[in-house]
Length: 84
Image (cartoon, rainbow, N blue to C red; front, side, top):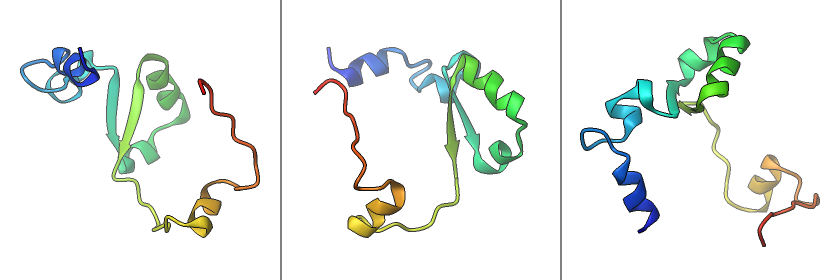
């Protein structure tokens, strides 16, 4: 069985639980405006029970080249990749 099929098997009423029945979903989808105003203790309480997906976060354009990647993390640092 594929990953996709397993995900679809968890749908409720033909839709992912975070849309059809948010109270039973492990995902909490929160718009940036609300998330930015949440107290730290509230965010931590949510993280203890679920994963948070923040939507509509303002971003600046980063080019997909050496300069753009350098803005995300130093290219001179060693990055460990587990499982390889």
